[in-house]
Length: 221
View: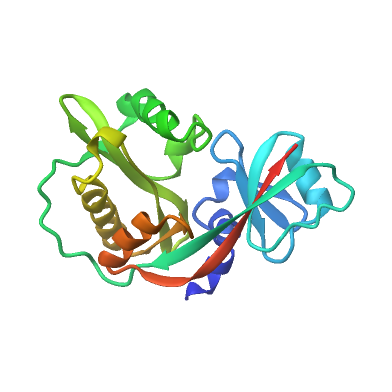
């Protein structure tokens, strides 16, 4: 079942997120208005990369190292740990968790960009459901859904305002979103940079199991 997680972008775009898919050769990429990344079942080839680069200057390729051939570009590598959750999370929810709707769109984008300037695109919230915690009418923590297959959904955008760290907000949001994914009949998974020890500790406390590592290759034209 989890074999598709070797190529989560490819399978998401081949299944639940097909409407966001742009096909280039053997590779599939998200519409860059929604998300700037893609993947291939095998190795993304130079032609695939150069075609997507015509419409997106800075993007990620999940999985095996792309074959860039003679394409002149900067390429970086981010190694992430991939986690899967097999059971619902039993937790006493003490915070009011609000689903973020269209009327929260601008506030959500502004919040994410404040901490991760290149993470969200204008249409990223279309990928799934996003939830937040407010304090004094101010959005201070969010978590949502990103890649989605018919049977698995990625927990993503786990972000807390630096003024509210250490209060367990991320823990409640990750648990809440994960349980909603289970209610949808799917399995939650997530990615975290391998050196983000604090986040990994949180996910392991919530009973996420480490499945393995996955490479994210940054391509910048």
